[in-house]
Length: 283
Image (cartoon, rainbow, N blue to C red; front, side, top):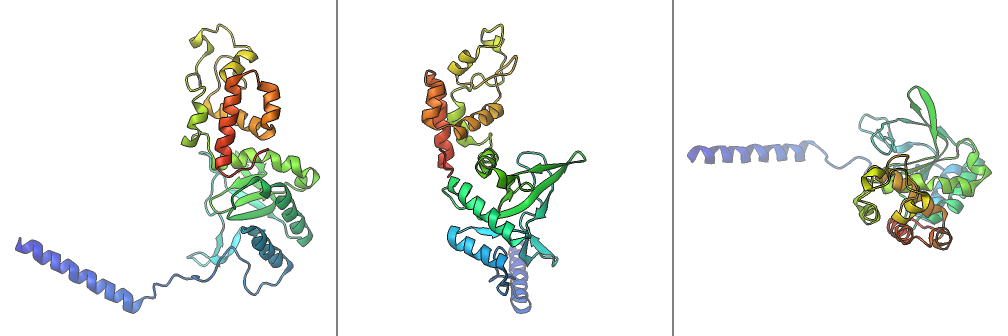
């Protein structure tokens, strides 16, 4: 017991000395405590900086045209907005950007997301990074993407001008990616949606008495939009096909197509409610 008390007191003394040394010799105040790396530098009076400031005042979200922030990392390099990010899912791809440097193009890109994308969110994205092209290397080949939902930003690519040609269609098509980025198919929030077809996912049709693939009408009666040649869709496939249906059809439009199939209508309303609860504005 005496030895335990001795070592306990010795540990307290060591801890006390260490704390005193830190308080006297080191300034523990975080660096850049008053600097927000997502804002333009205080002395930046460029047209781009003013565009970014105006965007924040109007929307409450930061606007970026470069993935380098105004702060620096511990090694003195510019802090990146998404260091070490990866694709949604298990794959890991490093993205490359082609920046939008022309102020007129920056203004046009900003106007497009304000008109066609921001109204689809009832929440505020922390920041938007607008680029001319978003690309990555996949098995040695260059691939492009229209968007990426990271931890601190939503990257939006104008895809070398494609966004300007048909903006409503362009931004509508990327909503599936954005929603999946926030609501992955494995999310427990989707449990009520999956409950309608839980017993069928991935099973062969013959397990339920069909010698051949069920007719399209029979699949609709079960709540499936379709099926593979020999087995029912897995959850991931079911989710993605339903996302497209919900995003592209109002309930009235959907009812005209599938109103005679109660499970289809129920799955539509359930998934729509889940998506809206995540802050997305649907038709």
